[in-house]
Image (cartoon, rainbow, N blue to C red; front, side, top):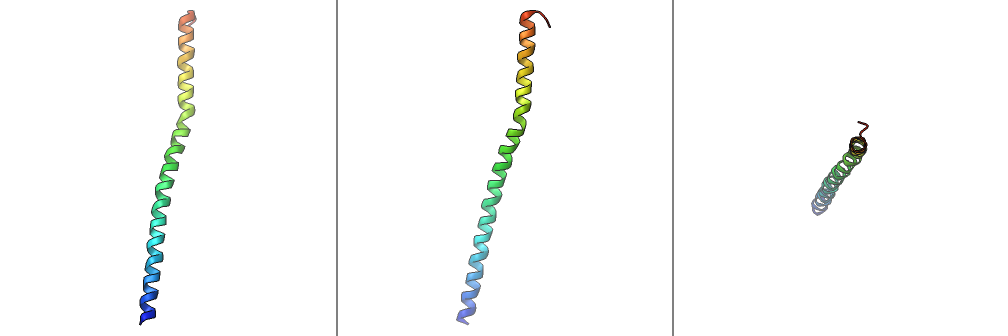
Length: 64
């Protein structure tokens, strides 16, 4: 009976640890995906800023 209680406690401890690890990895993955989304949108922002700079330069030179 004592061995059964010990086995149940050991299995419970392992399951709790695994659930905590899964939660940590989920949070970490969400953070990485968020960073990836920011990195993906960066070229669009660069292109938009470059287009605005070109428009401003053309407006200044009168070639628009």
